[in-house]
Image (cartoon, rainbow, N blue to C red; front, side):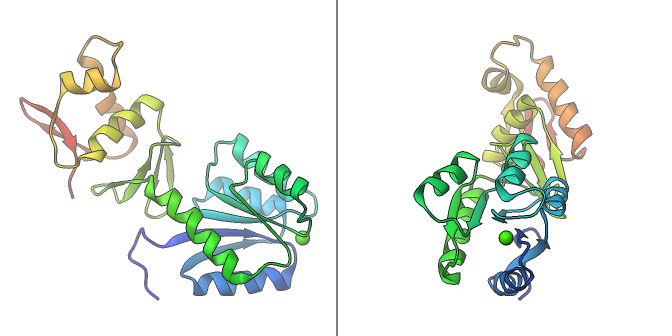
Length: 225
Ligand code: CA
């Protein structure tokens, strides 16, 4: 199966049971995911912090760093990727604990693979629906996390205002915004249109010169490929 660049869903599995990890990798690759497997929490933490995923499956019972501890560390470092926790402990209190730790979903072992696949599809869909395409860059803006994810997986953190400015432009690609309009929308307290130019400069420096296009005498629009 060949995926269009940038549309392949990336998935991280953290599972110490080698047989189960192999089975999950095979089945989820068959579902169209690009799968990375970590066999312990330390490796899972490293991958989760350095690569970009659309969804993660974390086993709760892991040696050294357990699944919920790992999840807490990822969340505290700003990783907002949807997470499904797998656990042999499937009682309601245990489930609540998992969701409180920041998991979006929780599945007790043994689980039905079709159910797991369906839940991952739902989580991935919710995550990617929020993303706005940045055609000139080859990537997407995730307004909820103020993050740009390039198609090669590289993540660029934006400030809140940088993200908001880019979001306004990316929600209506092709539409030209005058600077006063952008000032009112994104910087209502600033009062001076020069701040819009400054933030366009920041975005171009961080992402690409072409990410925002200047429309002479009018204002700005999203850069088109
Ligand atoms: Ca385990």
